[in-house]
Length: 144
Image (tube, rainbow, N blue to C red):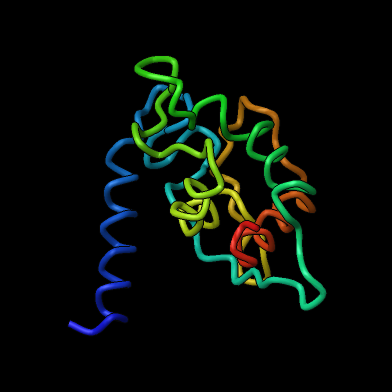
């Protein structure tokens, strides 16, 4: 198999694994189609890293993750405390975020090709459109 084939296969396996772990209790997971019409996994946003450099963890990413993600997606949470978030899908470190960047993009970020609003769940504080776009840029820059 070529690297490209393995890369695509890995992305599909990851997406399948992540969808299996979402519960339907209205927490961080939600069902395949919840009351708000959100579907599991949107489209890749097509966000790009700005030529002059984009957001960094210090200027944006860390605060975004703390505000919108870590109340469910943290290694320190187990069982019901995860509110339906898949075990092992955690964003405590930059390496965690980088490993899950494609998933975060298709669930929460915005760019020229898509705006994904599945996460955070509707009952949680929602990022603005501008924050979702900045998230897409941050991920496209490699979450520096």
